[in-house]
Image (cartoon, rainbow, N blue to C red):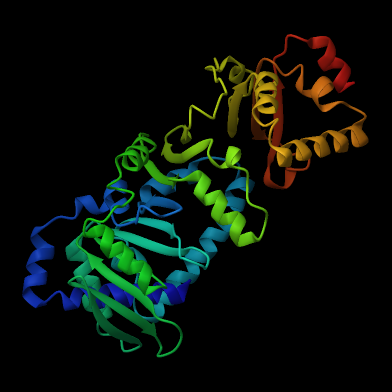
Length: 396
């Protein structure tokens, strides 16, 4: 992690420096980089063939809101490893007389990480850093250029400088390109070249109207901080199966879901998550109805996390009908039925799923008992049913 941070810092510095003296200074000073923190503008650097992309706002105040929620035990679980990793990064920066809060945080506005496919090997990572303050970025570059532990080799592609940066004179280089309000970084030069192609007008996630709309809408939240987007769900599953050596998935499974987008925001009441799934209406025959949400009132006021839905038995029936022609899924369901019967003497369809026809909800609440006691929470489920007799018999 620290090594990659040094490569990134060196690449940024070298790129800004090669932009040219006073002219670069004036350009950075007078032209704001507001667009650098936009998820869609970052997506315009990502090739449209990307299998998945994640976006995060680099805003300490937004993320610090998370520390207001949860039990002390849960806070320690969530932030313990994060705080340790942050400490290590700061220590590495300190060795170079750099301070994250003063030297890096002021100009880094956002980070997008994308999985870009290659012809044969596993997908390669592309990082797109949004610049929110070009003047602060130049100040950081001036500090970095004084470091003597970086080796930079420069090449040009479509009039854009690509910098191969090696730290300490050993190891594989990292590749960096400055693209107006963004910085593209990868371990593979071919991936950076693809990012340059996208920035120059080739198809990208940000230029594709469907992808751009999904990326923008899923962050329609108060104080949005993060997003995850899969532009082609079937292609991702297909690539994953090929890399893992498993049998190809049936077209029925691959083509039902077209794309998935999930956004997260943090407000004064907690974390809000919004998800949008685009499906093929010709293959996806499920019917979803709004859930009233009244069942949530059954949970205590200090509930930490809740989720609700409804009509599980109806959805189960549609699932069985939808995939009755998929042998792989039918086999998996039959095995699950058998395992449940052996363990509990219950029929999955008749004794368990059949009476779950109303609203249902799951929640985590503060608790010092149960298997989650070490982190100070407990889980609870609530079901509303029209078949109380079967439900009581199952639980008995």
